[in-house]
Image (tube, rainbow, N blue to C red; front, side):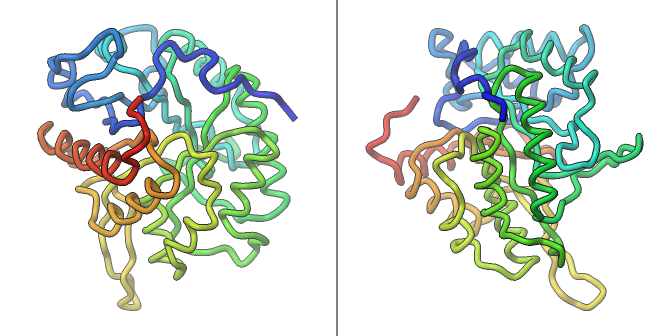
Length: 302
């Protein structure tokens, strides 16, 4: 088993236990115009920023200029989407090398990826696809997480997926699978609460029971997002994880529960489609910060 770099060893600006927002071109001007306490790298409406590193695998350009400027004001979290850690093939060494160089350039406090696969046999899918929770799949994922952590020289976080079906081949619960992954690889976890709610609705389990069984002590980051309700061919409702709307009341309630159980954690307002006005994102972030203060009143803000 690999021994990843301890969390915080390379962090020049740790992620505060506040709400963060994804850095998107539509909001570059708004983000960079925000006054900030540079010494603590905390802005008044945004505690930190998250980016998909695959959008920055070039030498330069306007995106790098914006990210460099933002990095002077805010801590960063990298949220990868291209490693296909749940796939059969090992992580691409060339891709890992580019990610390592990008990590060295911007020094993100956190780096996360998905419990999913997105490539096979040289073909790349524009989606994050689920895996069965079997012993063989766990063994393979542990190897891929180990290799990634060794290549990057740091711990990574793994995010729980949004599910639309269950595999008959699965041999363990998702929470059990993630717990084993953490123990064997030394990785951390990114808890996406909207994914929990979507999966529970689609697959017929209880969100609160899931969270009671989840290894919360290993969570380093939380995601909150919106979803859409559709109707399938049989007339049954299906929730779609869209990242294109406000956080629902049900997801906010689950977030309160998690904060009550585990305390303050960095929390991303994840909004990737149909981006709203900057003020709407700030309002969502303010709601998360308010819950952090209300439900964990004795924990100091980072």
